[in-house]
Image 1 (cartoon, rainbow, N blue to C red):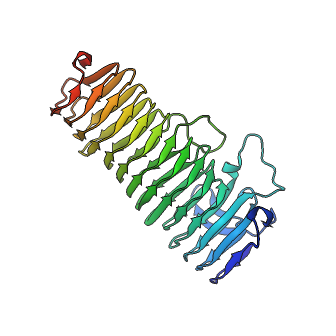
Image 2 (cartoon, rainbow, N blue to C red):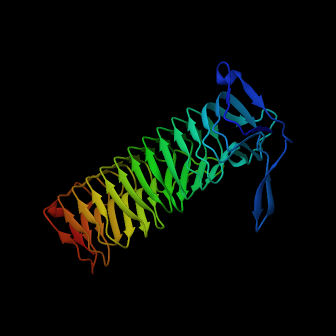
Length: 350
């Protein structure tokens, strides 16, 4: 493999698709540690950066299937205008996809890489790292990152079921990304999730991609988030907050989702200034005492707002009209009702 341990620039002289760096299918493997179930783990990484702040740009890298592309061990390298593709001699079985067989990047503890304007397919992993991704095109990928670390995902395009799965002690910003058939899932950390566009699955592809039942944006575990100004369409659930997550859901536009906002968080929080249109059910509160203020919920075929057993949300300044039933308050629920516009002929108790 190519080992870079100095602060060099490695750049293609011309269009990246014309400058292809190929590595052998049986290239040297890198020891990745021990797994209790599978023993010693080895992967072939054609490009390894160790403690380097190098710049690598304007290249196409042909990756052996069953191996990796670029391994970063420490340092703050920058990758720009790269295309990471399967090796041309690789045979992809009909029951597998490249997403299952490629690891385009892996970031190890203490690394702070920057990836800009690049394209890849496959499973990306980072542990205890602080990567920045800006303006990339990512296809049929799972981006699995865990902390501690600081992550920035800004202005990327995710295609064909890409999943952002971020957990543990990570924190960061997810802003201005465009996801088609993709989703964002958090199990920990502190996040700003802002101005993203998330479109529902149009199909289910092979490999580790988003299913039709995945929430578009979900926060669980002990995560904390401001979910602000996102546009979500075509999911079973638009935004879901559950477990011990702490969240503010503010100013989002949710259209044509089966459930717009599902709140199953035992503590308080905020659902403020959102627009929920169409679908089957608008806002469901099944746990906790959130503040539900200034939302518009309309045109849901079955139900506008549901207030579940044992909950005590505060509702004020909301407009809930034009739904199959606008409001259902379950027995033993104790909502605090302010001045809302709730069409009175479509209110029920359960």
